[in-house]
Image 1 (cartoon, rainbow, N blue to C red):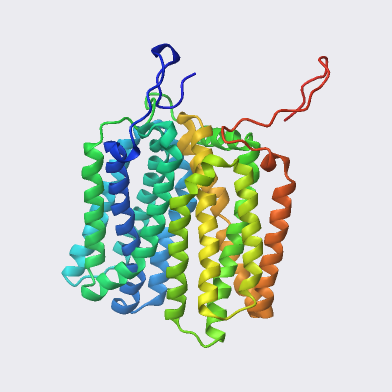
Image 2: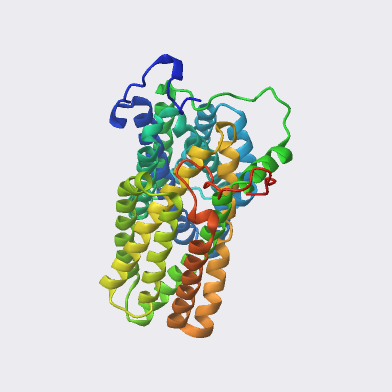
Length: 434
């Protein structure tokens, strides 16, 4: 069996792949998707500013934010089926066209002095839906666009791009809104247009085969994604542990706001900590491929959980803004490495025909509980204060680290996705479950 993107064994020795920087198709995909994501982040920041400052309603701002997040619950699983069935490049093209029209319509309406809540709700939902289809399609496509030897580096650059877009999107969106209330949405539309042009210029196929002519069995095909993922011992355990940490970080981020407020800080202080934390995340994404290539996935996960368990309680022991910024930069660095490891492992081990469904299921299970963290964190902070809440979060993180370190599926995970070798058994012993 040949490696992904590699020649058959019969074709002779495999030539070393050209450097990733010379992969024209990947560069077009990376840059176009980056501009699209940056535009989306700027628009996401501008939506609440628009509804509060121009529309004058925090309720309407909340409704628009809810409409943008609703596709995470409603669309993600069906999107995984579509990504596996249809041509992924065409799916991404449709997403960019939808985003271009949606964001362009907001820019035109605002330039004419019109703001209509139902229009904003539809645009937010369309943009959120398109983003899910786009993200799943791109993640699944990367392994068909780059050589297998470059997969971890390519996904590392994608992770860095996403974090950079998140870091730059907030000041960019607010600055553009300050210049002209329609400009963030025009910028987002231009980003979609640039991504669309890039996709049209890409020559590589984004998947090994389409299944458009097969009967649609949406529920059964989603079930296949769940079943396959549940059968992967490391991925199953990793998703459970990561879901717990996502809840913890939601509570920790909320606690940071209270810590800064109680120590006399300002919203600008939060912004500074967020900026330094974002830089830490970008650094982790850019350097993470070195850890992924050299260490087993279980080793990476356990080590990162250990770092988080060590850093979290320190947040409760200081109000110094520079120390807090350094602590959150450290957690973001580790988080970027973990995201990269999980992404590489999932893409390498998942059959190409199931990339979309498995990515959708993993995303829903690992991130779906995040809202619980904000809810629980809010109640905990109101009941016992920031110090006790942070220490409780740190204690749960320590327990998560210990549990991961003691879980055989995590300790024995290998880079190639194969299970660890079982101990020697008598020849007539029956095979049991792994």
